[in-house]
Length: 542
Image (cartoon, one colour):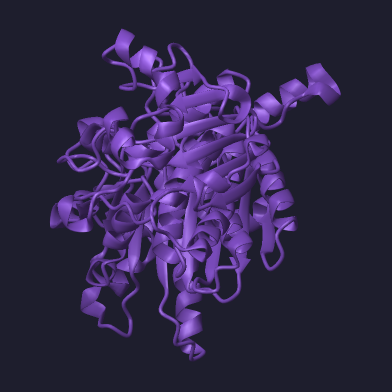
């Protein structure tokens, strides 16, 4: 993993040494707001006056102005715009910081200072916005601008040797003008360093193409990251006989690419939070082949497992004792070949459920169902031994195109009854608002269970229909019903009673894992979702 830039936090701009930074990025809602509320503005007013006179739109967008009185002679103004309108939220701070820091980097800066002068509105003045973690969000945005992907770092190292730049920035100074305790600033910097360490692991793997990040290479990357963080246990399964016995649905889905299949387990302390990640390193659709160019971008189908691995690493770095974590990451390549899984097959799941295969391109739910069943077994074993810790299971996957059709580039949760009663799905949505990773809470309905319910005695559950999720009603909700049935979690619903219930939340990040930016013929950027949202939801201090 790459080394993060040094982060320093300050509460007083006047105490910031000019020599410590080579650009000053100022974040305010507008130029007029800076004039009124930013004490440092008087020092720049004379230099900015000619620009204001010549251009009435000056300061309405990100701009760099040469001013000798600031570090490096570079002043970058990057406005957020309003923060209290109907749909405003903390992402406007993220976007402004990232744009401003990117502009400074473009100009040659490597040690920017960020003056966070934008005053978040009072809590009662906004609707769905939450600015309580705006400092964390600002730092994460700056680190986002600084990040260089693994594939680029490797290319630079191969072509430039010792002159290769592995990180855009050397240091970041953050000055917060609002009244904030220095201990709170230090805590924010610590949280952000942990989140960013995990996010970079996820992005390093996520940006890797299908040959650079095969299942085994993903496993090796995670193993190396785990070795650098004390207190994390790691187990890797590549034995096909073991996988066939323990994860039969995953085994069936990966039959055409047996050289590329692995199951990774990551654990921190006791197990009360169980995360399962889908890691399909490339998805051809299998025999139900993707056509019409829809195979493009399918190296991103592993982002669920990448994010779960990143969150585990972040949790270990943070030493977040409030969460006991166990992760199962199922990596495979959904290839096409003579041994491919076929529609009309009936495969017996780990939980003993007969699954009728209708579409081999709906492999993600097959990859995760058996690990979910294993989590269920572990929870039941812990309860039988007298473990009183409340446990819950979460699946994380780029599972459906339907979630993008429904919500655009947002993630969605689909929870069972016990999880909804505990508001576990809402917890992710609330944390996502604070960290600039908003989630929609979809509701599982009776139609979702009925859709996969068998109508014959030859199978117990239907894996899917034969159409794309985007052409299917409730296309991102009903897969959660399948996961519940195929893993045996249907025996642990509200009706089972409080003692037997097991909360389950399916998290579909097909939208939120990508930034949606238009990159022409290239792939769009990645976000690392839902690592920051999970940190806010599950870390006591976040």
